[in-house]
Length: 209
Image (cartoon, rainbow, N blue to C red; front, side):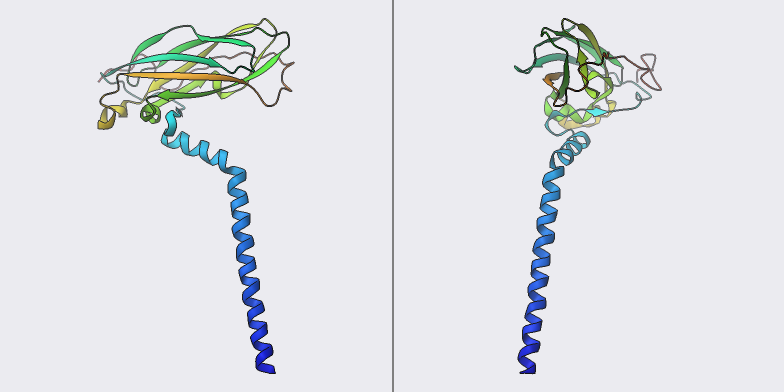
């Protein structure tokens, strides 16, 4: 009888271990689900996957001879009553050079609206080399009814692109934005504008190598 009791106790412990393991797995899966969008965004920012651009604090210390044509694209969600467009079709920049583009947004609705922009570049493989120093897409934008604003984008193409043989065929990069209504409209009564701040260590005066 004692052996049978010990065997039953052993089976109970094993059962609890199995149950505990299953609960840990479920908890881990729940955590991954809760943070999946954040983890995916971090992955895209680091790798440039899906044409996701990168954010930089300063310009490179040199420019290269290679010239890239940067084209600008704008889209608006049907749910957002804004007119949104680039103020230039394209511009040519040396790799490592500080480029500056302007976008225009107009609120055609009759109420204040908070908008937020998603962004990407094509070809997607160039995303890891496209860096933004300042961008209206870093924060939500508030437009009053009928208000028009010009929003700057300060950027550069990393000179390291010339060392990537997989991007030898890239002569044009398209920067694309899509504006959506922000999920949180609590800032709709707050006036806000996009301002361009100093971009960092080096500027257009950098030497071309």
